[in-house]
Length: 175
Image (cartoon, rainbow, N blue to C red; front, side):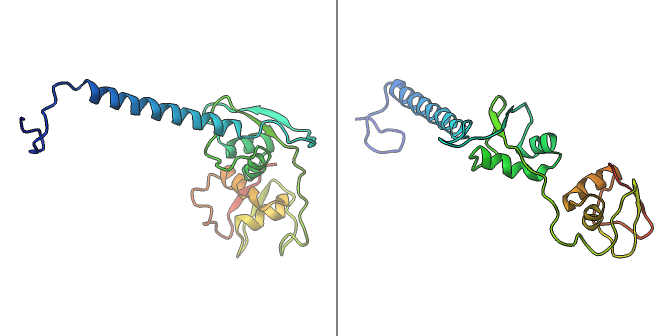
């Protein structure tokens, strides 16, 4: 017997064919499992409502570069509604959506603010002059009745740091 590669008294390999066939088999099994699991995940998205459930949902086909946030912004003008889309489609991992998938877009009622909006008066104009102790959240609540609209105010004013607004700043309020 010839000494093998490891120094043990093993027969020297005469052919790598069995090694190549084994590696190829492992790769093929991996690909079958990988694409099979992805297909199962796509089917679990929940494109159709459960038995007995009626909905007035619209169907949206996912485009290249879409994610649940951008879809919610486009369809509901509120990125935070992505959770409603995920819930309506039984999506447990929001990162698992792909181009061509069909998602149900639920009808979402606009939530009315509860109780007092904040201290301060309602803002009705297209601009607002910042006063002491203001922040974008409170300004958005007073202007729109929705604190999450602070993002729109920050974008409209090209604010690179939305936590940094100063007394006397004049902010544009997109309507």
